[in-house]
Length: 493
Image 1 (cartoon, rainbow, N blue to C red):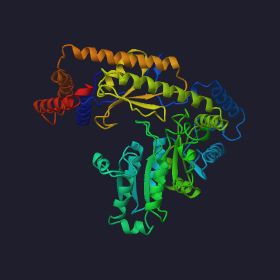
Image 2: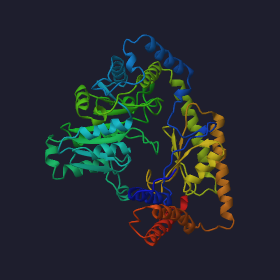
Image 3: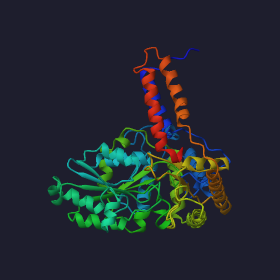
Image 4: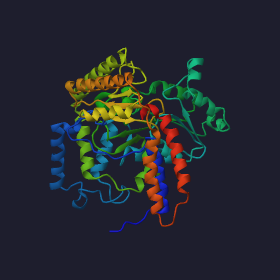
């Protein structure tokens, strides 16, 4: 069968992919080996491995399969449409109400994912003249939502920095603190209407940040916003994706743990992390819920969640409310502490350069432990070869110079697995340091470039319309970018 030659668009796409590969930034879909030990996924409580939950889920499915009181037979597997058309049900609305009550919120609204929830909420809330102030490390979904909104300004502040407490701290960060950002907004051209309470300022943060595992200083944020915006037109929005199930009584989240339910304008709780399902809920007031139903495009123009998905959410929240997850959480905290001590011990050894391997000294408050290394791909590959799944995190996901392997500890991991991971990391460090004492061979970036250039040449030559640039021009461009980018990425190559 003859294959159709690539179009001009496909040539351009292939060239972009080739450039990304030269930069060691090309993403690929992979499947984890079934026998590998998991220190990568976000299933912090390992709820999918709890027999009681599996039985509860299957029982609920069986009940609704035989007694179609809330879900009609035609929509048992799929919902049948969007929430505004045929995809709503009494079952859906009862779970929404129960989850909102569980988290101490007046109302809640389901979305198909945390991404959809963030985009839907942030894109439609701001009115003309309103302003966003956001932590520089917020999720990509928040950026997408803010960009689609009618907000007049979007202003970032330095990660988790509420007040710059010293001149040296001011110089050490490139972005303002939250307090400085608020002052900047108040002194801007739009400042007068904000001071009068005629425009809103939305402060967007996460309770737990997924790449660093650190916790937002929510109480300090609330007090600062209240102080700078005394008319009450400062509205804090918190993404609780990575705190759901882990913080607060029975896993209600960080906002509930701190007793700030009435101080936070909206919360996004997602079900794809510790909850072990998928989807999300936006918690706010009944007015906001009604507004989202009318204006959130990620809700209006998509099929509603299916019954099996809703059933999984139902049984997990019943499990949390009963207090059954507490034993898992205690076990998880013990494993996290053990993992951190082991890694800290490895990093403290005299031969280990902090560039090669570093972990924060402070005890982690979450199951996420960033293991900073200049060679994240090599470390992740070495772990994979030893039956352990971890992920390298590199730019643009994190800033250059903060490359890492992201470790996620789970309640279902064992002490033996934690100790085994530490041994593997120690073995990798030893192999690297031994290699550094021998003859070092300079990496052949030219050779790396040649392989990718060849694939570009093949695509261009096969195009019936001919290339838009000459082969020599493409070669020179690709080679120059390959050498520059590879050299800049020398530590992770």
